Length: 202
View 1 (cartoon, rainbow, N blue to C red):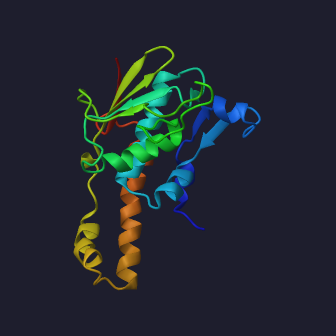
View 2: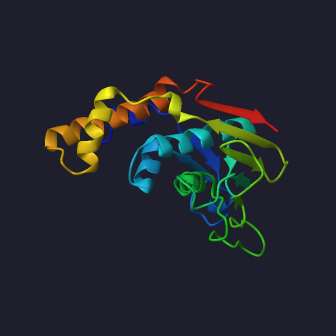
């Protein structure tokens, strides 16, 4: 299984999972996520998946500056409905990392470690997403604007051929390379570009 090389350059996300520790899943409860794992779970890499990963990374760094983020103790809110646009795709990525779900998640053990009801949609926020620590109530809004990272003109030229399945093998390969080139510019080249990704403490 060969991924684009830049996937390995994307910073990882370290979390502590008390449920995993309690059930003996991970000896120290530390679970580390890499972008490649999220890509395998999502089945693809795109500006949406990359953005969801980056939003989560930035939010957790802001909420937990001195320690790993605690899975199952993070609430996530979206202004969109679950079915709107790419909200569901973003939610799935964030859920994989934080453990937060709306109603479908783990119900807990004797009232502990519950993961459901930690993700809400149609919330009264203006950001791309709001992350909140359930233990302290501290919140951070995350703003993500991939629109400022424009695809290269050649990718746009190839898009109609690929979308209508009229591209040949070479054109399809080039399109994929150009697609991931844009993802690289989002995850690597503009990692600290506050016009593209920014956080605000609440």
